[in-house]
Image (cartoon, rainbow, N blue to C red; front, top):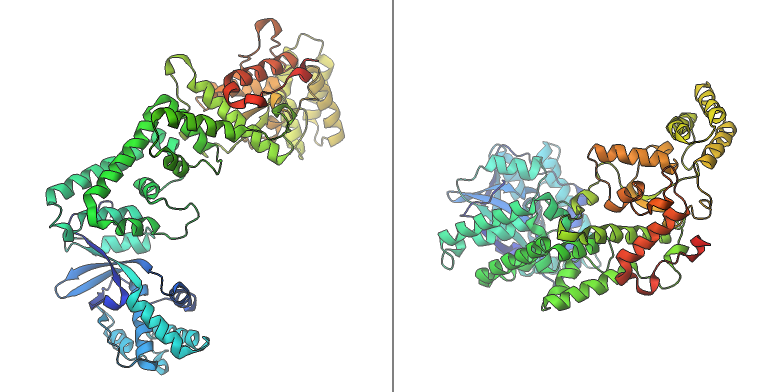
Length: 570
């Protein structure tokens, strides 16, 4: 069901108010809930007590004087068995206002009306119905006082427990809808239910059909715009079955840790008295997000805050903080928020190390901001940081990578050692030194049937020595030797020297792969003055120039945390 047609009836109903004859058509299997599902339902109802509690949707289609039960058979049948149990064991005067019948299993309907455990093994339907009845009986017997518990549960069912009643139009393809909701396991979303509120035929007195159709069209247009990968990547790294749910969640202020699948629908259901105001709020919220996306500065600042994963600055908190603020005040708030995400209470970024988990996360966030701000400040606003590509998991996760590596982390196999040697032969050959002996050693090692670790490490040390500038060891794990790259499965490449990585970055760039702007500039030696440029190495002059540019770009956010590089210049 990709679209919800005008003509739906949507409301919430107390279990005690459900009435009518529901029939289960032949395309559905029978009742199949087991002990776990039945017990969970009872526990939820009982623990919720006198608080309002809403079960998931029951989807029906009117068929003359009865309803075809498209989705919710298991819940509605369990509730029927529960009411039957309470009536038989505790409250014989209660009235069951609804019944369940089966298109092809008429005897099952009779068994439901008079459940006899002695007949449980006659067929599979009887077995599951009788098992549910037995589970309910066991649950009540475990309570301190089963009579009081029965009074409580029945009271909750008629006063506080509701179902979401979703009645589709008579022209709806029931089999297709059932397939989607059950076989495809694609449930109704809060967005679809909220949309149905506007299109419900019960609103005919307050909303014309033309207005409903207009809302349906505008709703679909909003959903379509949210499927723009750049727009969506700016807002979120998650996927939604219906993306307009994100907007509705913002309005409802849905907690990030909420386990209530229909939290947002229940929020809007409580506001349904003024549907026109609700719709204007939805439109207004969407236009705010679109305005942020289209504004060059807001796009980058808000996009960074969301991408940074700082728990204090989610899309929800940013949206809430924006309410009632002027553009100037909002811009100031964003500046302060960004500065707060990279602020260090103690020490300096130059003192942080790749090897420490907390430092790793801080450096990663700083370099993300460095990339975003560099792109934001490009003259003419000709480029935008591609948050959709950055958040994409295609090609691997993002990580801090050494610009120049000198260790053998993750290389345990001789195939990896040989690959490392193969990668470095062209770089050694390109040096203006007498490297014939070293290259011969490298080639001999590659040709060996079995290469020993000690031999590889001796040759690796020699290769790293000729491909490294002085001082690299001291700054191996510092921010001056780190950049953002996608994690590679190639351990040999991850542990390569600058020149090898530079050649690989150039290949990736030519192939059109996304490389963060500043990472590309690092390996193209963009920051290093020509007079100090050593093409094959990443040395002191490169580190100083790189850190100087980070300070230049992020100066207003770093404040007292400007990266100190005096130690590097010694």
